[in-house]
Length: 387
Ligand SMILES: *Cc1c(COP(=O)(O)O)cnc(C)c1O
Image 1: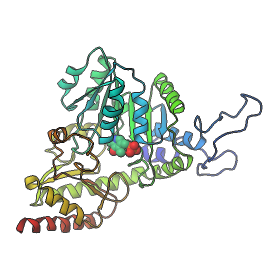
Image 2: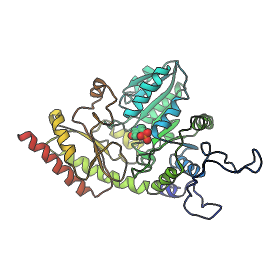
Image 3: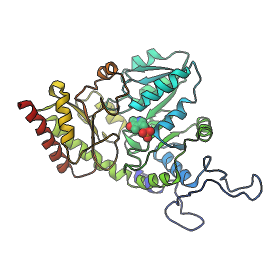
Image 4: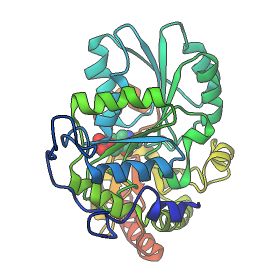
């Protein structure tokens, strides 16, 4: 079955009790039992919910995995993965992670005795060099946030396998439509379903997808034992969003390619980070492991002027200045003060998150309108220069 068909049908059956085509919202905390322990497979809403089950089956299919688990947020899913570990265990993670992931690693789990090495994951020698007897997990994003670096998933998976270490890939930026890490040898896919999967900026949710049944059982235990489960209504919204994931992603990618080209030619723009450019250092790997190049674009302004960046970000009309990404509407953001504010300044600069870095989550509006909007906003930056 191809992706679009799976998005609409995988794991979803008409409701057996009514024939409803759309998965009902099972807004219930508990389920009747005929006699103690005799029930229809559902006992308590934290443990099981039919709307959530349908979404989990669907997400497993989209990532070509055997199992999926949904959580109340992307970070709740991340939390479950790190809770597989013990004090003394070590994790190798990329140094340009989503800010919230960095924060939960360093501020929640490091004090509990788990050690994190933040490295340049594109550099495979660096990855191999940091593996030791205590390493349990390699954690990466690709493309990364906000620098759009590309990590070779298959190559990192080889290192992980040779050392019997788990590899988790945060696939949020690519979405299951563009990239399937399990097919490339990863053990675990992590999603902030808040972003492209739901796609309409009206739900916070996370998901984990894996093949290994033992790993799944351990994570499922944590999903129930810790209880960071998503609400049935949110699972319904997410299922609805997924039905157009393939269409949305095509339009997201079309628009991003046009906008990246426009920015590259603009006199006020410094560097444009977009894996779709042949000169992007990760372009060949992206071509190998992604269907298209995604819809996240980041760029700096010449001379790295924070003042001009603020002026540009405040002047767009269609691009809303907001955190988050992956919705149908275009967003513009300032990583240094918004999504990446929790990362120390020195480390931020080292990874290229300069003060003037602007990040775009390109939506599915008409590309010409989006380009006009950026053009007029950049004009305001140009006029500042003349003053
Ligand atoms: C948003 C995001 C997260 C966190 O997900 P939430 O749903 O906000 O908890 C994790 N990783 C990436 C790449 C993200 O963009």
